Length: 298
Image 1 (cartoon, rainbow, N blue to C red):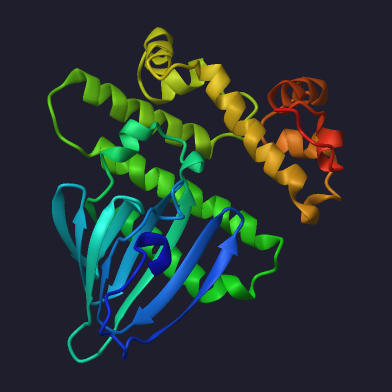
Image 2 (tube, rainbow, N blue to C red; image 1 turned 180 degrees about the horizontal axis):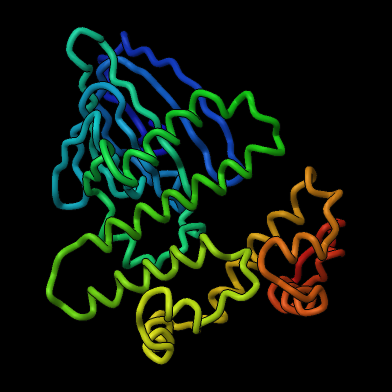
């Protein structure tokens, strides 16, 4: 976590100690660390250029310089940040403990199903972790940090997917809770809420623009306009999310016994032939060839 965020601690700190663990959950990494008070300063570009980090302080206080502002966060908060944009950080021990303790999740930016400009509005903000979705995510992260290492290798990517969905839901909920009279902001929040709903319902084969519009009390034409503002269509966005999850399942050795048509049905594809054609268009190989290791052309 520390090397991914900042690159060097100052000289004159020979007593620094750190203990902890980390586990890979597919493309996500979860860490839990405890360390003595520390001050860090960036001295080079981070190697984690394409990642966001969700930080959950468990004990102690963190002070950081973020872009052109400063922030302070501690136990009871969640913080999502771009690891390349914090320039300095100081970690203070909790009174009477001697250490700062935190859990952290590193997430490739490409996996967050929200536009970059939307995510950017949440970065560097303290998000309450004592109630609501923040508390749910905080509890999940700490449980995963403590127990995921004992899970089977096949289960870890599945846990990572569940964790990714929770992080995405938290980002969408935080954006939705932003005030502001601008109609554009309200449309963005509504779009994020609809997208979060889609992610929860991908396995429903009858998920359609009409069903989504009815669930969110808007017209189908307005729903289409919301997605057009994101440079896509409702149907195309649903299909892309279904295909990506089917692709992950096909790559999972633990699911080799599941027929391809079973995986297709799990993610809302009613007809195996339609799934095969869509998969080939998206990834340049048939589902069968992909499962057996054929290289993709896209």
